[in-house]
Image 1 (cartoon, rainbow, N blue to C red):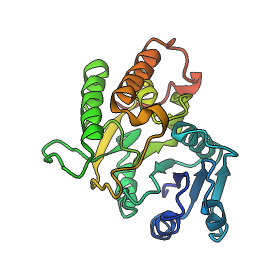
Image 2: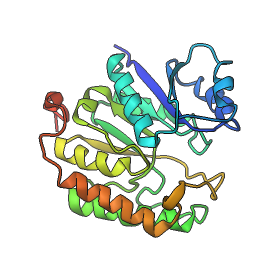
Image 3: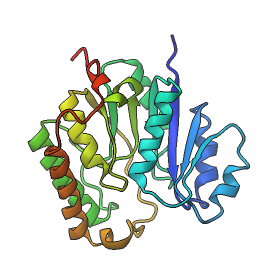
Length: 248
């Protein structure tokens, strides 16, 4: 039976990119969910010109992690088989959606995580140095502490087996959400595979916002979220997550 996937795209003030991304993504995905995280530009009006979209709208900006948590819940309610997530700044190429779906069809993973830095690929100078350094440090820490063996902790281009989402209880609303997620992934024994994706930085000056624009503050924040989740009670994820990661 063919897979029933959902593509979810968090957006916040993406009037420059959203129509192009939707136009290209629509070539590879039939069901598309937009989580509009409180956009104050023309993004909401542009979304209204695209019939057939599923749209969740936040009245105010609530953060990237909250947008993904809403996408997880929507995918579970809709009984989709797989959820693919991608960004809306044209740094994720929609053509890779087909590759994620092909990887999902192999049925040997619960999370297929995009990696911009696969083993053997030389470092790319187009990545802002502070982001590359923090990603490298955090990825190494995750591998050492959790034993996951990943090469890119922060790539938002991913495919999730929807049945495995019952293992995840995402409560961190902002950009540190992956710190919480990776701890829960490891604890639940979910199978992670990586899929190389092209590294694109169209706007290296894009901000995280507030204090997180300071790389050292951002690194400490990621570490704090990781340690907090690591010390959280193990029974925190949904009880129904027992079947996830089966077949390892």
